[in-house]
Length: 112
Length: 139
Image (tube, rainbow over all chains, first blue to last red; front, top):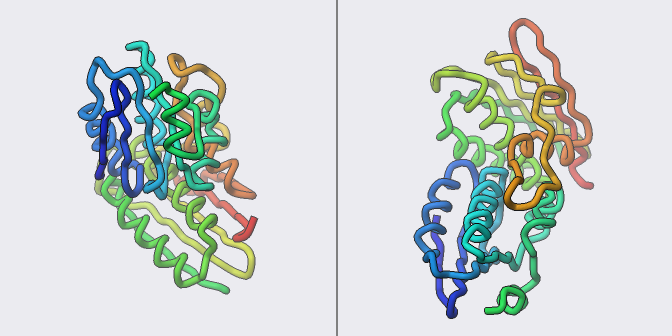
């Protein structure tokens, strides 16, 4: 699991690559935790390079959103492929995590 | 197009990569649209990891996955001798509405199966869970 992470003020922009499934969800969670500092206020997860997600990947996204919210921060997603967008719709995750078309729209939404 | 594939899988988490690769190969051979490949990968991951995580206490038992593709229809059967589990009745209700703080992920996998396959039937016979799913290849 490869994640490129950069910081724009108190916003972290993380761009994972590949599949988010039951074989690498633990790695994904560790990489996200390593990328986010306690002082960070927002996370934008850029899914442009993600081709697949299962409930194991959704679980990590939920735990990350919960941890950010507990610290008064927020999270947004962007650039989801159609099948991944469908997984978010079927699971109802699109009602708890804001989804944007582009990275710039996501950054604007979290105030980055 | 028509094609078929039978897989015998160990009840170990690291078998997921082999299942994924086998489905990729079948999709290429049978010329599946990308949407079908995604749906089948998702459904099989959720069901296989359920069997591995909850159906068995060891990682050396076997279960069977079979794919039969004919015309516009794909049939998938999973036969497993682990604990009795009827995904249509025994899985927890998915939580699709709670906020971030209360949301639970349990039951989502089976919810994907019900939503993404056209027909799902479960039977427990001769000490085995038998799950049969049918989907049209093109939605």
